[in-house]
Amino acid sequence: MADPLENVAVPELAAQLSKIRELFGQILPSEELQATIRGFQSQRGIYKPAGSNYALWIRQTLTSPYADKRIEWRPDGSWTYFYSPESRDGRADLSLPTNAGLLRCRDDRIPVGVFRQVGGPSGLSEYEVMGLAYVEAFDGDHFVIRGEAIDWTTSPVPENVEPVFHPFESSGPMQAQSLRTMRDHRFSEVVRRVYNERCALCNVGYRLRGRPIGVEAAHIIPVEANGVIGDVRNGLLLCRNHHALFDRNAWTVDEDLRVGLTADSEFRKSAAKNHVLSWEGKRLLNLPSRDEDRPAVEALRWRLDAFQKYWH
Ligand SMILES: [Zn+2]
Image (cartoon, rainbow, N blue to C red; front, side):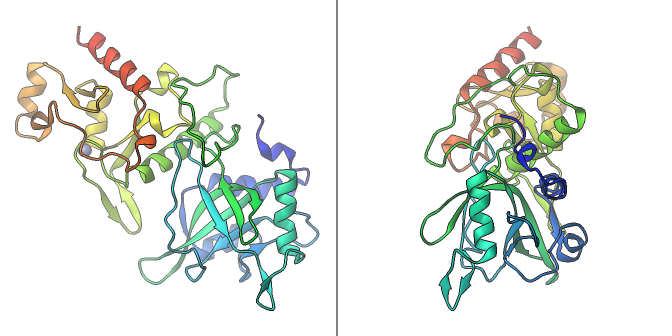
C-alpha cells in the first residue's frame, strides 16, 4: 500500500494532514496548534473546512464523554477510539456537514487528524496529537476511529486480530531519510507508551514539564540489521544507561525475558556497585501490561544469538 495521503486530491488538505502526522505524539499548547492547524481556533469538536467534502480533524476535550478512557495501543502502533457525532436538538444528526464529512472520509478512506486534550501542568489548554486515523465505521452511536499504524503504508491491523510479527523490514526501495526519521520517531512514541515511560530493565522513569526524560526506545533487532521498526515487539524502552549497555552487548535478554550479562570481568567489576549484577537471571522488571505487546520470541532469539557471537 502506498501512502494514503496520495489519495488526497486537494493539495492543501494533503499538506494539513501531513503536518498533523508529523506532529504525532507531541503535546502542544492550544495556541501553538491554532497557529499551524486550520480551524483549531474554532470551538468545534469536528472540523470540516468550508468547501471540502472531508472532515480535517476531530478533537476530544476534557469534557467529552470518553475523555478519561485510556487508549490501548496495539503492536503496530494503531489504536481505536470512539467519537460521538455532533448533534442537533440533542440527537445525533448524520446529515450535519461535520458528520457527513466524517462519513465521506470513511467512504473514500481519507484519514482525519485526531487531537486529545490533556490536563496541562498549569491549567494551560494542551492537546496530545494522536496523529492521523481512519473512520472505520459508524456503529449507530459513535464513529469508530482507528489510528494509523507506525508504518503508515500498511493498514492498521483490525482490533480483534493478532497481528503477525515480521522481524525484518521488507526490502523495498530505499526510503528517504526524512521518512526513516519520522518512522523512528513514531516507533519511539508508541514503545514509550506501551512501557508506561519506564525502563524495562530498572523500572526507572522521570517526567518533567509534561514530558518523559531519559528513556529511549531500543530495537531488539537493530535498524542496521534491518530489524522491523513498525512493530513494538521489536522494541524495549530503556533508560539511557541501560540502552547504551544493551547496544554494546553488556547485557541481553533470553526468550523468557530473563537478563543475561556478559562474563567480561572488567564490566562486571565496574558494575559491581550497580544493580545490574543482581538482576542477572531475573525477568525484566517492567514489561507491557498486555502479552501481545511484549518482545517477540523471534527478535529475542536473534538478539541472544548476536550476543553469543559477539562474546565468543
Ligand atoms: Zn534502566
